[in-house]
Length: 284
Ligand code: AMP
Image 1: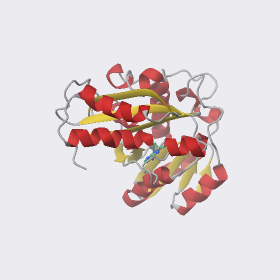
Image 2: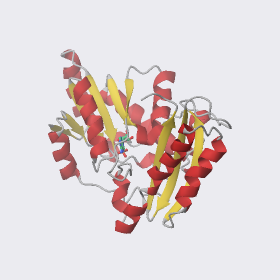
Image 3: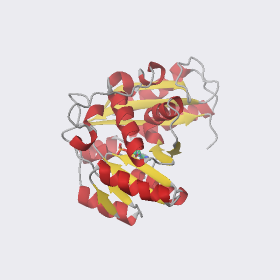
Image 4: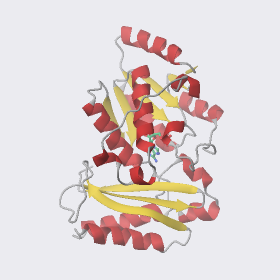
């Protein structure tokens, strides 16, 4: 596995891959790998000739009071895991590679997708995501790029960017990988102490409770959100940020859940801000 640090090195590598007519799979990440990241890499390995993974904690997608400075890092371990996963290139750029002196461009997807859920609570977050992901796509030129359903709004925003800007990349969604108690794997789970870690199982438990009610015929968006919120409120360590339901995949507000919908929530437990979701009404 190659570990490359500059845009020029990656572009040069990619040029050779393209000349050999090989397909490129790309997995953008912020590092501190867990089984969710590894599932994305596995999908890329299965589908593509060459797999490129990036690790970049993108300052542009963090708010002033967020965890940019404390975001967990372990490049040595990440490199080992990526190598074991069969990754061909690990791209680990420094800030000056991504945002050189004078950088002043933003890529912004419309408010119908970005001004709700995490987009409201983290102003500018998705602009930071789309700007860096478009840059990474232009550097890596992937045929396929893999994104986790755990970050469902991010996945939908990226898909919209790709469609609206006619990018030649297919976005491949990957199912959420979970711990045994249902907690979605996340680098931010590292912030939880043992009591908080136990408490964090409440996120998925709440989603499943609402999903069960939906399966039993409940169609009121408000009631389904209340079922999830009530379960969250039973956990004293959980501070609810939002519990919302929207149509899927266009994220329109709903009163009645008639077609496909996504029930999403964000919760603070200790120092961690955790998100999770379930999709209702889509055959999987
Ligand atoms: P991150 O490093 O947290 O920015 O995540 C990098 C990619 O991994 C994103 O596409 C995430 O949606 C995806 N991802 C994160 N957690 C999981 C998970 N538990 N299961 C599947 N994919 C995930």
